[in-house]
Length: 199
Image (cartoon, rainbow, N blue to C red; front, side):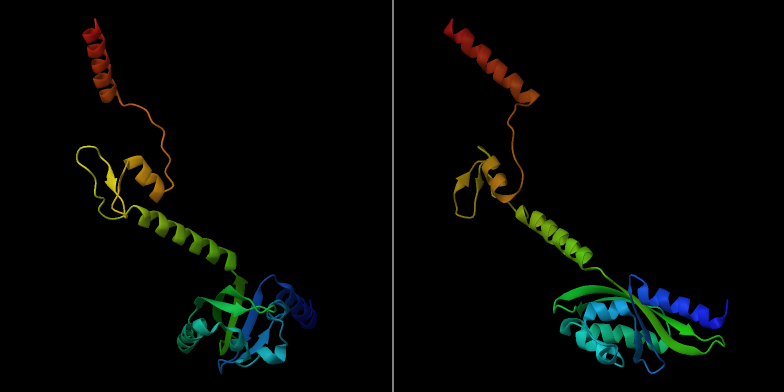
């Protein structure tokens, strides 16, 4: 296979890969973005090259993103980071970005090649789970004032309510009533005693 044909095949693979791909040179500036990246951002290559791509990074993520990129670039180490990137429709999507240093055939450092995937659904699912866990943990946390005799609980409005009612109002728990063996024996004894007293 001749070099020209081989190059063309690699170019097609990179352009059509189902992930966003970028490349930076030794000045830390990006000099290439594949079609998937440009389609995602809705911007032209001329707008993204250099440091233009940073215009799409969410303002809250910009400093952290830049810090990870520059620190790893200086020591030429592989890095991974997540940040929000503005999509063509103006919404921000969470991106998982992995950058890898590369060299030419002579071993001379040439810059970085990076690949990105949209991980918004995963991030949103993790956040929803975290909030659900916090809510669940927070519902029945702390000291509960409970009556030593009747086992009622004093609620936030200073009223005493049944244990089942309190827990149902502060959690997802539901109750089905039954009787334990110890109590069953006591109730049975009481019923037998009542029957005997009536005779």
